[in-house]
Length: 480
Image 1 (spheres, helix red, strand yellow):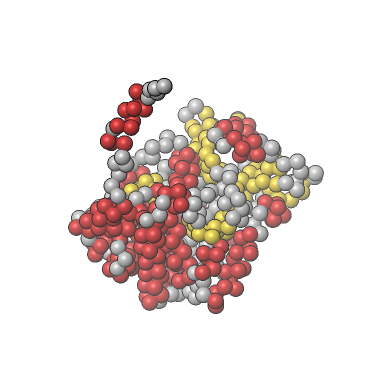
Image 2 (image 1 turned 120 degrees about the horizontal axis):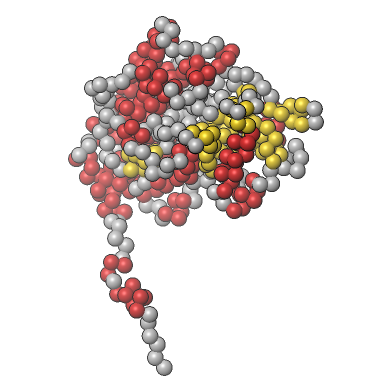
């Protein structure tokens, strides 16, 4: 009895190119190391401002044109509080500066607004507590240095803002960059499936904290674990007759007018939620459709996001004992777009969601995008995620990160960024370029010190514009 082989499969078995065409890990590490001849590590430490640098006020005013005008004074007041608050709101300002620096052009998915307050704890789909990057509004593909340089610069600016000295600033940058080096080298050798399953868990976090700081860490972990929908129900809503409604706290939390140019806003949101739900995975779509929208209100959040349309949506299951709070965030073009080009995604909400999934690995089960169509010519891209479900951000100097425990957190920052970059880019080439020497850490510190001075000059320019009434500001009571 004879057998025959289907000709299509016979060809597959004889083609030599069936072998993996990609260079080996060793070759990619070598290629990364070779890039130092084109852009030396010492060059990475030099900050060179653009020749025709656009001043920070002009950039902020341009951003404001596409935002809700009534909220712009709140944004400026929040940025006015310190050089670090200004840095947080100034991603677009630094983007033009990063575009002027030498680069290896090793592409990863950039966070786009990397800074020390852009990390935190969150729960995975299995409600496992992990640490990672937590804001992706500016995400776009680009060279890895952009994120790392913004992160180490933020560490110096934040440290100085809460009274840290040069010695501590240097320690923070060295801890971030050396941990980045260490982890990116580790991930370069890791099988892809294993890398996809890597997270910075609670046990990993504890290892990075000294015994003196464990008590403060325990408080942070305990508080974050308690941030669920039930707990949020009590603080955000109140009974109005027989129904629960979101509490008005204008101008930071307030309900919209009933009509938007003659169109019911509720009907627009209903259509937007149908659009959002249509692209959810089947199991999550079935879960989401069990909930009914009960109320919604605008909620001003963050610093850089202020002025974009952000809402909190309150849903219930069978009763108020089963609440669900989702955060609606308008997604505009990334501040990196003028320098790195447009996203492959036409929908900006999809851009944000795709970037978050690449960098974070285990995002909120309700994370997804959609579009709110006001009319034929006016469509607003957005994304939704749970507002509070085992989420805890990093606050600098206000009961969170202090001068004492900042170095403990710094290693986690470098680790989380390396993990995000390894998930989305070529860790082997980055590892080859970075190496393991202190020369890289020295270069990152030199850049961070120089850029902190640039940020200080920009902050003073911004303060002068406020003082001269060129920029409108709100009172502190209104802004916080």
